[in-house]
Length: 520
Image 1 (cartoon, rainbow, N blue to C red):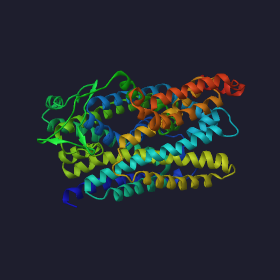
Image 2: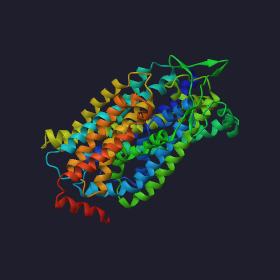
Image 3: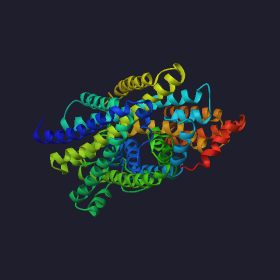
């Protein structure tokens, strides 16, 4: 390891030390109760809530996956994805946040998403609880794997070390501090990580534009690639055995591919995913006062807009500056690392690299924590051992966290995994499984328990069916699986709810209470 790598490692190690200290500081409070460990006792302020929600949501794909898409395919795919995400972020904070925070508190003081959905319909046999918890376990194992892949790629690129060793080391670090610190440590460190992420993106973008000779030079260079800098066409890299062809020192591209209206709508449907993201919805539930969500919405929306805009442009600038350095779709996701280490002094580059580590940690700790709570709180205590003590449930959460981490690490063993693809599948899974159920549960009082069960099953199963059976047919069927699965889930909820017995009087009364609720 040379001196530059050592300086980068020192800067990143200092950051990791700060995260560990946060975990230690909050460990005692987190371990006082399951509520503190899993939801922080509903004590978070508006700034921490906003930054924690966005940092845990965006993950390493914001700094590696999204710039990688822009580097490989150009503006269209990355930009429409970013636009959809920004719209989804704002609408989720505007419509869902306050209602969910109040409803989760009134409906049995629910501290997990499966808890809320189950309490909302006052079910006794816990069918909703079980289905929700199982889908969370499946999709968060995949999500956590994407974070471990990010860490592995980051460290192996920076230090030339074996991918698997670096991936396992990063996974171990995340698991250790989440194991001890719980939700409070996760949320407070996410606040810090959100700041580091936006700092890293902004600095890399600003310096990148300067190094490229100005924004006009970047645009001029990008226009040389067919379809690269257009909202309605997409670049088509010519590849052989998965590697882009280079001729006369320049990457080879084919004719621009069309990016039609259906593809745009499909890509923008990423925004639908927000309504079903447990890591974001949990932050809504954990804020100390519903009235503070207005400030949180503004902070989150601005953060999201700046971060997404910067990530897309970094990929565009990266292709202009390093046209032949990253010749596979998988390696293209390292363009942010390539630019940062090229632009900055090693010690400062280490701080910027900590942005990727921050994004990864802020997401994976949320995923592991929510997945472990889905089993310990909802399945173990809710179904298997209803008389389990709070301390037993707490320890079961930690054991489950370790098991899920092992599964995620196994999924992440393939170093050629593409982060964006892994995230897109898990995102679709959560969006289609929970999004419609949350929206209808919050805003349509005729929604029935059977309707939500049908909607969750239809949405979750449709994601798998569309991804692996229908999408390969191509053509109009090749759209992102989230959009059709979300629609299918909505249809099932409405139809089954109308065909089944209307909700009981106490359920309707509670719905009306929430609708008219004014916090003291």
